[in-house]
Length: 415
Image 1 (cartoon, helix red, strand yellow):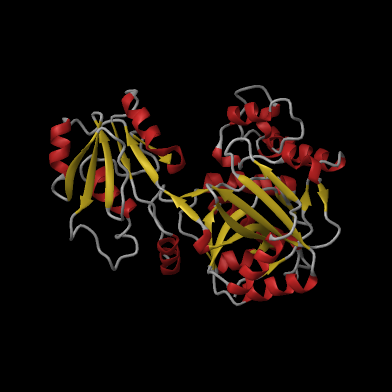
Image 2 (cartoon, rainbow, N blue to C red):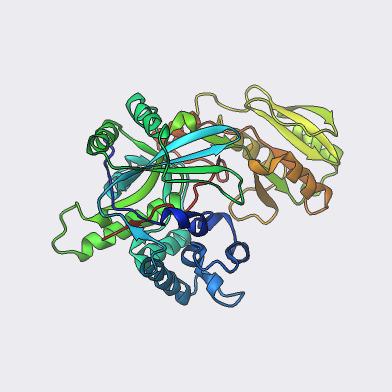
């Protein structure tokens, strides 16, 4: 069963939400955050990217930066830019991209569910990134930003969500960078809150879509606080962390594409010949060409697009990892032909989220920065859930969810 609870959210007054809200900490660098915050002292970047309050070049891992985050978080509350609700609530967060809306329930999930594997992951985490987020949670004593979960479709919860969606939201705005619509409702009906808790309790698992490091950090900080409390009971607020949970069928997963700096010393002709061993290769000309199905890839090389279709026998339909296009391309193109084995550390490869489109791949190759680009067909949420259920881990840089959650709509305090 999945344990969730409502919480006393800390959030901006309605008239300030567009000044406070921001993109997540991990989708932009320090200088982008500095630029986006500008002279807006209410921007959440002062809490989640507080290095912008120091001279350019200051490391985001400088101890003074974490201390500044806590100082700014306190200031936001003292000045009324963030205000804590007087009672516990669940919340609804809706995002609309390209005419499609997905509705998420903002809940507190239990750290024990993460430790026991009831909250399932599909990516490896890095200890340095975990430690960074742990420091941020510790110093603020809060989950400033939510993680992003998926749950199996649930008719009862969907009915509840649609009922609230027909009412006026607490927040409703178009974000300046992504241009997507973001809406937010407060659930204050006790019966509705009991229904949400009960429906989640029927679910054997929740699935991390995005936010593996934040989930790990929250669980580790919760475990630390348990050890520090001789009177620990298990219902303390530090046992919970904030998540936005969406029905799996509503989520949009975009392609996560690759660009490479070189083709391992080969000529273009040699590279294309090597590809023909495991792929059916077809020249598609100079117009952008997008893969139309699983196991088809688009290659951009020398101003031409090529279709690459994996031949039968190059993947195992019964293997939840081996059937993935990210695995097929990694094994048969990047590793076997280009000798790029470790996607996490190689300097010869970079990754481009599908929201940027094929034009970004073409631009980076045509500019001479990169030698070739490879576009993939996106993975499905079912594939992600199957892999998580099997206890396996997806290859790196496999998923790109859009739209990204905006930060600053609600915060969860650990005490």
